[in-house]
Image (tube, rainbow, N blue to C red; front, side):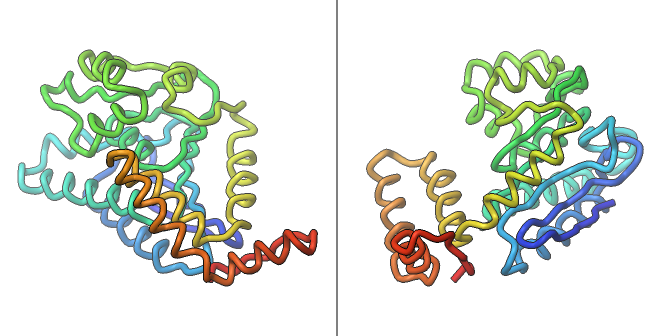
Length: 256
């Protein structure tokens, strides 16, 4: 259901549960194991989330199974999904979702837990339709959507649960880059490889300063930035960066 491949300092995590990558508890547990492997990798600094399907990125929870399972089982599924998205956000790695097909419900919640979202142009569907089931998103959908597109737009989308398309997602600010379908993975890989050649410690510090600082007052955010910045001065990567600049050469960072 989950495959993990490595290309230098880039890891590629692929959803592969036909036909729609709809997730179950077993899927989420498989993803948890993959995330543990990712966090344990001391070389890689960027992760691409992709889909083996050309029609679905992820359709969210498997509703047929969800409706048959006990409440306790479903709560266990949701708890694992929440733990997975929290782990993605807390990771030192930069996560990039490469969205090439329908991304709905919990699938969109997974994509929003990533740090960046690259998407293919097309009329495939996006949305958080939980309200149509008498529910609300349970894996961060209300909170992450509001932070990405603003409170008013988030409420507009969540109140109806209606779908939208990739161009809308880009216009809302939910998508970083909107690309032709045949260019999506190539472009995402090129960006990931470029970022991964940089200093991993500084990349992690940047991610945590931005993500954590966004929840703080400006004064507290600046203090957090100072903490992360000060910790980098004596690293080997910082010395290499300064030396490479003075010597007019390309820096070779080692993540230390």
